[in-house]
Length: 75
Ligand code: SF4
Image 1 (cartoon, rainbow, N blue to C red):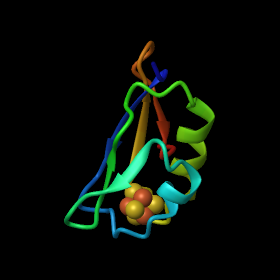
Image 2 (cartoon, rainbow, N blue to C red; image 1 turned 120 degrees about the vertical axis):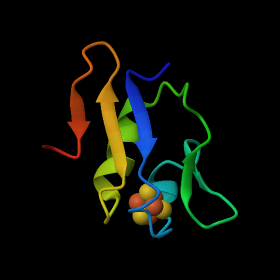
Image 3 (cartoon, rainbow, N blue to C red; image 1 turned 90 degrees about the vertical axis):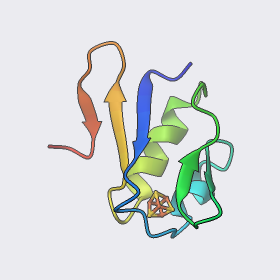
């Protein structure tokens, strides 16, 4: 299981697909052309981080499950 809780802000996502390009096993577009998480139990924390960093809208929010600390976007 990922150490991050992954949340996508649908108000920010513009369907650019960059997250999918970085981590195609974790993110996909839904029928409304917005990203959603297809593998919340992924072990690929590095892929999750890389995808979040790649999002031009900062639409991917990451919270460290153990501490509750927001990792991305930086406050
Ligand atoms: S990179 Fe960001 S804006 Fe683009 S599809 Fe993924 S979440 Fe949406």
